[in-house]
Image (cartoon, rainbow, N blue to C red; front, side):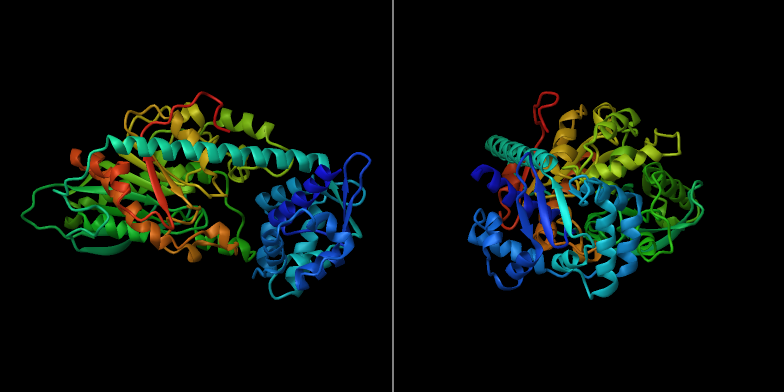
Length: 537
């Protein structure tokens, strides 16, 4: 019974933290003959004052003092979400699937899926409150009793615990391997400038319009022109940057400026179907949610902007020396997928079909699968979207496990660097970056792990790139602290594989990374992670 009670306490804290959406008068767990109950009034009093009444001890007896403080903070934290935004998200395909999945565990008092009741509580609170707290939602839930399917909850907890243990073990292996590789690493001679610092070139920024055949509207792209001497006969290498979902072309502007200062021409297209403006219009009720076809349209945007620049070379002397036949690409999140896809990995519909059919009927441990499984509604039959001009890929926090999958990633023949954040909860490191890295067969590949890194650690302005409010733990430490390392690694990688500078390899090893501070982030880099099929889960 003590073990059961401990599980109940852990489960309550986990579900409250994961969903922020339940209750009425009481929360009742159903597990065989046991029906332990937590009362909402008691939980509210605890959240506001810290007082623990006898009936709440089934939870608090198994929480440390620190965990009690964290739970109280979570219960009373206020999130500024307006009625229209929460309604649009709750009724979107992604929001509906998330609530339906949660409703398999958090049920109504007649054992039916509680997703619709959760949606109603969220919308009711958003309509009446200035911001949303968990306690507000508890007070707005319209059923007297919320029933918890404890067997499913237990399975979720077991899967979550195993996932955390596996992640910690795998990350420890990567860190150990990177330090072993450092022992035989080559120290930079610094005959070239340290790539973490700005280069010698000034640059100019111009915004242009470009049209892709399969899009109705024109899109914008920022072009960074390095100012080079007219007597310099060398061609100008080119890098394309692809932003993520609900983001825009300013998200990685600091990297664009860094590359341009080192003599690269940099192209940053706006993916109009998945950018910040589109999501804002969707959340404001004036736009449909992004189409699954965006998985095809995004890499096609890369081809379209390169084609537009080729055509522009004929009339724009400042582009005449740009080498558009050998291009590097860097992308973040969905932009990381875009980069890998444009670099040679086709959409893997077989992998998606198998994974999404087998997907748990409740909350997935990997939230990115909710987005990947949207591809089941893909109307386009085109899955081959690679551009042969792409010669090197850097994917930051990409989603790739099933939308690309092993057989697709093995088709990439060019150099690839994948960057993973240890604490990324949106595209988790192990299934979305580390395991996919192990599938790559290209000869030149690097995996970079960022300890304490999250999904937002590499963005130029993480706060401006978030459509919905998120807890501080999901944001992580100040992203500016990660800039020197990612500037150095990405520039060195492109210097080696786009500019053809073999000495750049000296900046792509752990010996060099060990020169950086280890707080708040520590970067580890490896070029091989041997695993057996199915070992990384």
